Amino acid sequence: MGMKNIITVGIDTNVFIYYFQQHPQFGHKAKNVFQSVTRGEIRAITSIITLIELLSLGGSDKDIEKLKTIYLQTPNLKTFDITQSISIEAARIRRNYGYRIPDSIQLATSLYAKASVFITNDKRLQSFKEIKIRLLKD
Image 1 (cartoon, rainbow, N blue to C red):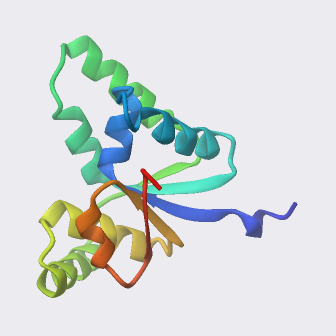
Image 2 (image 1 turned 90 degrees about the vertical axis):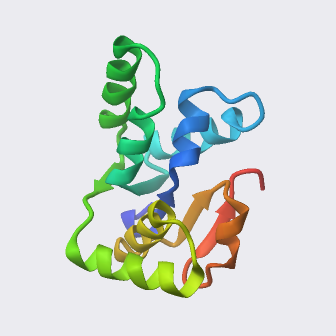
């Protein structure tokens, strides 16, 4: 199999949270996504905002440190900084769709990275027409 068959998938913060917190309803589906990423079946991208949101969750310093380590060591996951071009794109998305700034940044990052799909569990983002939105629950 050639490398060109591997799709790039944008992953929203909530998918990471469900995975790391072993969410009773969505944890298993999130785990399936991360197993595919770890095995290299899909290439994952996300915004640096994911790291901010993840490490803001609370928990002991030890838990936060562990979470940070696991996140940073996830294979086939590329974290994008918020560049000027991503910022401009996020502002456009926010104006056009009325999404919150973190969501706009995530979507702008996925567009910038040329992701084929954006995985989230936020139903509100389904109105976004510029990239295929896949809800985790589906």
